Image (cartoon, rainbow, N blue to C red):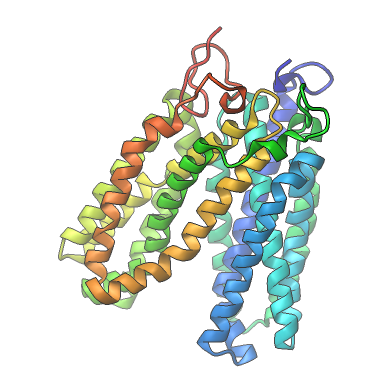
Length: 428
C-alpha cells in the first residue's frame, strides 16, 4: 500500500492539498522569523552595546545550536512524525525570538539565541521532511513552492523589520507583535499537516523488530553526494547574499543604492523561478532542471565578473537568481526520497543529514570568501565559484538518478510515465 492510501485506507487528495498549504505556511513563517532576526541585528548590537566580536559570537551560537538540533531532528521526526516537529517548532520559534528581545543581560541573550537556533534547526528539518512526505502522498512536486514561500516570508519579514526599525520600535515590542501574529497562525495551519502515519508508517524493519529504520539510515553515499551539491549551491547563494553589494560598490563603482540592486534582482528572480519550479518539475526530470539551473547560474556569474559595467553585473546576479531557483529544492526533495525507502521512514533522517551539510555550507562560505578575497581580490574569488557551479551541473545527473538496487534509495514515484522527484520515471 502506497503512502497515498494512508488516510482511511483511500487516497485523500483533499488532505494532501491541505497539508501542502500547511507546510508551505511553515516555510513562510521560518523565512519571516529569520529575516526579522537579520534586519534587527543592528538594533540588537546598539541596545546591548555589543562589539563586533561579541555579535559574531551570538551569531555563531545561533548557528551551532541549529546544527546540533538537526542531529536530533531526524530521530524525533521518525519517532513522532514530522508534523509534530513542524507544529511545535513553528509555534515556539517566534516565542524564542521574543526571548531575545526581552533579554537584558548578555547571559540571557546568549541563552535565547541558543534556543532560537535550536528551534530553527528543528523546524528546518521538520518542514523539509514533511514536504517530502506530502510529495509522496500527493505524487507531485511541491518543494519549489515551499522554498518560494520561504523567500516571500523573508521579504515580508525584512520589510516589516525595516519599518519597525525606522519607527524606533523596540526589539521587545517588535518581536512580541511578530509572536502574536505568527504563533497562532502556525498552530492553526498545522492542523492540516499529515498524521504521523504518513511518514512514520514503519519505524521497524521486517528483519529487525528492535532497530528503528531511521537509526540504520546512516550517511549513505547518495545522501552525502546530494549534501555536497546542496552545500555548493548554498555557497554560491551565500556569496550573493553577503558580497554582491560590496562587489558592485567597491569593484564596479556602483552607488550604495545601486549596489543593493544586485541582491534585490537575485532574490526577485529566484522567488519567481521557484513559483514556477513545481510546474517545471512535473514536466522535466529533476536532474535536467538541476543541471540547467547550475549552468544558468554559472553563466550569470561569468557575466558578473567579466563586465566592467554595474548594470550588466546586476543583470548577471538576476540570471544567477533564475539559475539557483530550482536546484536546492529539487536536491532537498531527492535527498528526502533517497532516505525514505518505500515506507518513508528514513526521510527525516536523510533530510537532517542533508540539511546539516547545506547549513554548514552557508555558514562557512561568506567568511571563507572574505578570507580568500583578501588575497586574490573579490572579483577573482567570485570567479572561482564558476567551476563550483560547473561541477554541480556535471554531477547532477548521477546524484539525482534513482537507483533500484535498494529500497532505501527508491522513492515512491508518481503515476506511470511521469518523472518522479529524483528525475526517474516509474514503471507500471
